[in-house]
Every structure is written in C-alpha cells, then in structure tokens.
Length: 334
Image (cartoon, rainbow, N blue to C red; front, side, top):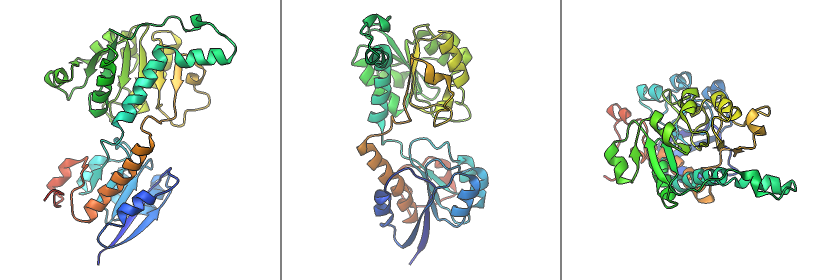
C-alpha cells in the first residue's frame, strides 16, 4: 500500500476536519502534518519529504521548491497563487493547483457593497450620527448611481459576476483586460477598453487583476492623475496591484474622492498607515472571499486537488497547465 505525506504549511482555520475527510479518500496510508510555517526555512524543514503540500500564506519560493524531494502537487487555498513560484514548480514537474470558483458571489457582492457604501457615504454618515451629528450635508456630494460608469480592472469570473449586479442598478460597465476580446465583453454588455481610457471614463474603479510581476503597482500615479476627482477606487483583489503610496497621495490631494479597500499592500495594515485616518476610505480585513459556504467549499476543493493527484488524476484546478507536458496522470472524467 502506498505511503504518503501531506503537509499543510499554514492555516488560520479553527478546524481542518473538512480537509482530513477529503485526504482520507486517498488510496494508501497518509501522514497528515499540520504546520504553521512563516519562513522559507520552516517550510523546507516541514515539507522536504512531502508528497503533497497545502498552502495558505507561507512562502513556496524557488529555494523551497528545489528542496522538495517527493512533491507532486502544491494546492493553495484561494484563486491567487502569488505565494508559490509557479515557474520553479513547473520546471520540477510539480502541479500547482488553486480553487478558481469558490467565492465569485462573495467577492462580487463585497466589491459592490464597498462601492455602494463609498458612493452613498453610508459608513461616513454612520460615523457622524454616532458622534452626535445628525446632518445629511456631512455626506455632500452624493451622486445618483444610474448612468454612472464602473470600470473593472480585469474581467475574469468575479468581475463578470459584478458587472451583472452593477448593470441591474443602471450602471454602465467597462473593463480593461489584455486577455479579453472586445467580442467577449460585448456578450456581457461590457465595453473592453485600455486601462488609461478606463481611468478617464470611470466614476468607480474596481480592481480584480491577479497579483503578478506585470500587475504589481499597475494602478499608480499615472493612473490616478487620469481619474476624475469624484472617482472611487475599490480593491478586493490583492493589495500590491495598487501602488499604496500613490493611492495615499491621490487621496491626500483630493485627486480622487475615496477608496474601499478589502486588501492592502502589507497585511495586517500598519498602525501608522495614513489610510486609517482618512474618513473617505473604508478598510476591511481581507474578508471579501468569506461566507460559511465559501469557506467550506474552499477547504474541500483545496484538499481534493491533493487527493486527485495522489490517486493518479489531474485535479480539476490545474494552474500551471504546461506541467502536463512532463506529468502524466489520468483525466478525472475517463
């Protein structure tokens, strides 16, 4: 009977019962190691002889990957894989898997909730009322949503879902995504434009681009200078996609009107961040992905990626498809 070692590098969940239930379906004896690694060295020590890795935030760098002796799959909680050196894993014949479809409603709902709260000054006015000030003029100006323009930075599954919700409010939606055709956008009633044009047109900008070497700092001084003075920017993707220093400069100079941020460059946010003192900024603790249902789905699907590979199948969510040139497994529908 096969002997496997599965290591979870780090986690923030109270229980791993869902993962354990899925891992128990692997054909063989499985040692399931639960670690809380913070550094490369800790990951190397925990995972050197692992057959599979489940990862949340711990760094899976090239150095870590080169130290792995048996690893066949690295499965990450979430859509993004920015904690993993994907090219290094591919070179070593290790499948990188994620979960691309577990929180489309949650993130799109949260992005729209931040947009609405910023646009209608809900949070700002709540603060004034609780401070004893009953005065609608504290929220001036507020603009009608209908016929305003929402610009989506990235047009994957989540922003496609958000587009439908915004359109129901009478908002025009445009998007910037170099990998999406104008014809595909038209199928969703969305005009595909260049990023600089999106920044000029949009009243609300919602960031949904993954964090890569190409998208880090994608929204910076140049983009903020193009935006309307009443523009509001929303980020439920990854903090570093927005150059945070440039964002602070834009907010301090009133170049834009506000921001709704579920993510920031460094998490948790630093106690001395100027963003904490800005009334026009709403901050949340990277929670857009969360619902009880989404968390359950994420945990099960992340573990299922591992179970599939160790049972001899390609997982449903292969991020580095090029690895199939060197790794031969069965398709699950065969």
